[in-house]
Every structure is written in structure tokens, then in C-alpha cells.
Image: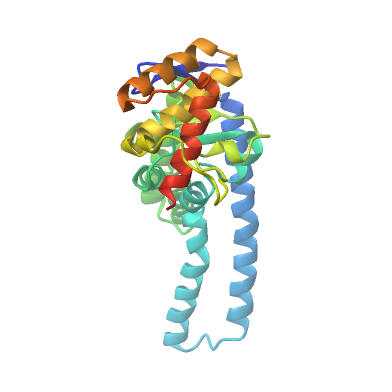
Length: 270
């Protein structure tokens, strides 16, 4: 499995595992199955509405087109909504244990999710369907052109993912995001935000001087250090943070970084 090292603001490289291509492919297939079943349900709803409508009325036909567009809207929004609300995952990604992060290892911004979505495969599936439909109704020139362009796009996507050091497709490159392998058994640790009791008392309020990017870096460093049982990495990060924030503490490195994250979670919600 490929591993990439991402530099953080604390001059410490954090390692991330790039998922195998088959994981991405199966994830996409699972998502397409979810969308297919939704399409079947949406189509049945449309059929039911059509059977109770007066098709001879022009206004009714326009209304039916509007209903069909509304029914298809969740398919177009599926990936962006799921990734924003599920911390960089869709149903397929969740099952296959992969997620989207930014190139610093943190949670992507909404704009990054939107850029990925604008170059999402689902748009090209729709264009491919339009091309095939054009061929079926006799517009072979237009249809064949669209089909060929879509096939070339998919081939270029596969080549990019396989050959790229970070396994990025076009949408990832433009959005500056990557897909990483995660521990599918972890849940609350997949995000910076953790549960902190209302009675919690912050130890280091200086943590709020750091940016969200810095907090994500601390989280990534802590997780990597724990996974590799790398005391030196945790100690180095702790010393740099103490120096930057002018904190004096004899707390062990792992505990110190853990407390910093808890302090951030408590203070950022107050």
C-alpha cells in the first residue's frame, strides 16, 4: 500500500496511506448501486404521478418535467452532500474505509468539496447517457462525439489515479484533496471534534491562537504518533507548540496533545 508524507506547519511529516485502486473502484460501484436503487424508486414515483395526470394538457407536461427534475436532484447532490455531512465519506467510502481529506490531512473546506463535486463522475454519467440517447434517436454524430469524450475522460481519470503519487483524479488535483485509508472501526476520531463535558476546564486557552489548519495538523500528528508508537514525534510536536504558544507544562507529550485538542473543542463551542 502506498504511503505519502504530508508536511505540517510544525515541520513534522505525517504519513497517510493511499487506498488501493480496487478500494476506490468498489466504493464507486457501491455508490452507483445506491444511486441506481434511488433512481428506480424515483421512476416509480414519476410513473405513479403520470398515471394520475392529464397528459393532453401542456401545463401538466411541464409540471411533470419539473417533478422529474426534482426527483433527480438528490442524485446530482449525493456525493457533495454525503461528503460534507459525513466527514469526507459517502456510503461507498464508509464501507471501504476511505475518506477525503485536504492535502494537509485535515477536513476539506466546503469549497473544496464543491470543486470535487463539479468534476464528479455522476455528471459525466449523465452526459454519457445523453450521448447514448442521441445515438438511439438517430443523432449519431452528436451522440458518438459525447460518448467518445466521456470515455476519454474516464480513461484519463483511471490513468491519473493509478500513476499519481497521491492517487488523485482531476477533481482532487484542482480541489487540493486526497483520498486516504482510515481505520474503519474508528468513529469519533475521524474528526477533530470530540465530546467534551460541559464541566470541562481548559488547561491551555492559548490553543485558540492556532488556525484550523494547525489543529488538524496536531490531530494528524497525534494519531500518527500513537499508531507508530513514536514518542519522539509527539515530543517534538509538543515542544514546538509550547514554544510557539509560550506554554510551560511538564505533561507527557501524548497527554499534552490530547488536552490541546480537548481544550480547542471546548473553547471553540463556547
